[in-house]
Image (cartoon, rainbow, N blue to C red; front, side, top):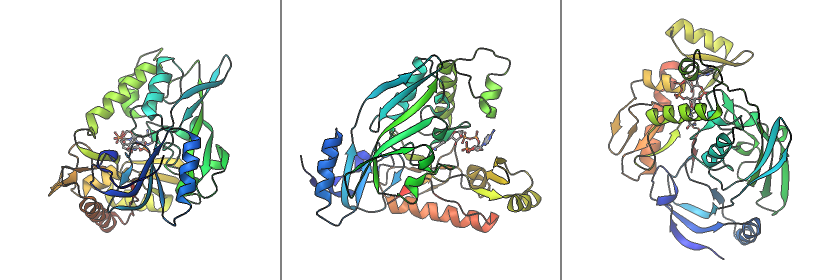
Length: 336
Ligand code: NAP
């Protein structure tokens, strides 16, 4: 086992950007991962763990080590009459896990159906959709420290989860490889249909099953989001900004109809998609890049393979939104 030099990452990122990794390898076990990490220690170059490459934008060649995660497996580690605990290895596709749990009618992650990416990537940005976040069901995770090769367990609390945020995007950014996650799901689940799309669809219905919610979420996402197999993209490019009460009041006074939701006491989330749409970007195309016609948060690559062109458009969007609304958009996608 070793590294391949100057390896093309074209097929390994959903934006379909054609860049190269200086050194590339993949791992199927924790021992293989540790052996590879010990090689990376000999050179002072960055290490990038790649899952399904669905939340990354390469703007240039990666001058370091890219390690492709192929750690697979889902195990039941504990269960009682009300709940079940699953250990999921980090190279499993997230949606394969959701599919497996929905088939068993174990509730908790059905609203997170069809989110691209691996189980290991999910805690890094605390994936969320339709009123559910990974942090609602994650008990703990195991990770290997890149510089020492040591395994560490992080409790839910230790992950410092926030809105699309965790310790792995901040203090411990690029310092750990998450190898597995433990989820706790409910055996007699109550569905969460607080978001308008789900609430309206299921209105008046009783006994809604986990699979029904999963199917509806899949249908919604498919109707609004481009399939990365057909059109290069990485889902939502920006996070929804979280604003203070004062800022929210100012915006409501100035613009009236802005979609705003209270996340915590005195913290308000504003729809980034709405801000971008109001700046006139929805559906535009600039050369080979653009904004998807059905979703203003999704930047798309029409085939130019150019990371810098996508980043130029993202910068233009950020500057225009800042100018019009005095709000800083923050990318959700990892830009390299
Ligand atoms: P939507 O339903 O049109 O709503 C627009 C935004 O308003 C969403 O981003 C959502 O925030 C927020 N929102 C709507 N109803 C809300 C409520 N009852 N309480 C609090 N916030 C509310 O959104 P959409 O674009 O079709 O997306 C639907 C869901 O899928 C959202 O949760 C979204 O985050 C998720 N999604 C994720 C990605 C991704 O790549 N990460 C891509 C597309 C959609 P939140 O985003 O905080 O939920």
